[in-house]
Amino acid sequence: MKSIIKRFEIQTRNETEFIDITQTVHQFVENSGITSGIAFILSLHTTTAITVNEGLPDLELDISDMLEKLIPDEGVYHHARFLPSDGQMAVNAPSHLRGALLGFQCFFPIEQGKLFTGSRQTMYFVELDGPQTRTWAIQLLGE
Amino acid sequence: MLDIHTHPVMIKELYERDPDLEKRINDAFGFYFPAQPLKGYLLEMDEAGVDSAVLLPIDATSAHGGCIVSNEQVAELVSQNARFIGFASVDPNLKGSAKQLYQAVRQYGLKGLKLDPSLQQFYPNDPETAYPVYTACAELQIPVLIHMGLSWVPNGLAKFADPLLMEEVAQAFPQVNFILAHFAWPWINEAAMLAIKYPNVFLDTAILYSGTPRDALKRVLAAQIGLEVVERSLADKLLFGTNFPRVDMRRFTRGIKDLGLSPKVLEKITKLNSHKLLKLE
Figure 1 (tube, each protein chain N blue to C red):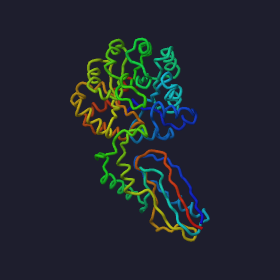
Figure 2: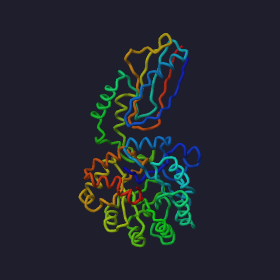
Figure 3: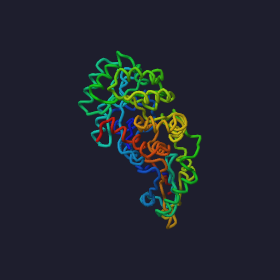
Figure 4: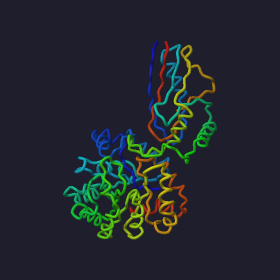
């Protein structure tokens, strides 16, 4: 069984931002030579997310509004203090909690050399504490 | 909005050209967050609604063996983007620091002086070390932004950053404008007293000790100092500063906007007071 890992670096531009990575994942799988297996798509950060939904701007806004409603910026959080290990004020609890809610990875099967997804399923890298330089990755396992 | 207090300490391009800089920033400044491209600095400003930002170097040669970003590096960043305003820094413990300040300001067009007595380890009211530098500021007609109060740097000593040390300085140099950074927390009443009394003493809003920027600004400016005092007596003396990247500009900006200040005073604090002090426009 083969294992292939590829990292992708992106510069986000907004505090909350939905970046469509669907075509990148599809192309990587189709060029990988793996015909049967599984693709894991993951973020390497704790204030971002990977999520799957229908790729529509209004849904992106609805998800963003839902996150703000469930985890408001002005809430009271424990994670609101100086963090000596960073040398920074850790004041981004909402970003961490929104990431925890959406999750940090998704996966799809690979069948006959292609990613097995629904036609409306769009994969997003979600920035939740931008702008920052971020890294997400794909791991393919299969033959 | 103009952010009077930012440190260009996590810029990837600077680290690439100055391999020792990251270690100095780690060891002396106590900042360990991974570097980001310069573009990220500007995007953070965009997202926060900050039009321009003052970049502060710190010359800590005698205390820590080098600069936490040099005057030359600040000048280079300023030359790359018109949204940056550069300050200079010199080490008052070194002979010739005043001369060095003349050169930095005249050669690079830097607009003010940054001092951090806690990090640089000098008493800001020392006539031998500090006063020659203030004399140069008077001649150059530039303001001094000076760290006061709590120091987050690992070896920073608060005894050097007591705002009461600045009273005799304000009296001795009435022609120099002094910006006491961080509202000198925890000595906020002493800082407010100086800013209320002396025409040449100003304060910045970079108050960071616990909680979110919104929490800290509300606690200090609204609950402890009182918004009515800010509106009546500090409206022309308070300058918006975030201390980015010790804290992000976005949340700090929301915190200042949510304070409940009148629109006129909010505009003074976030823009007009700094523009006047820096002689912009």
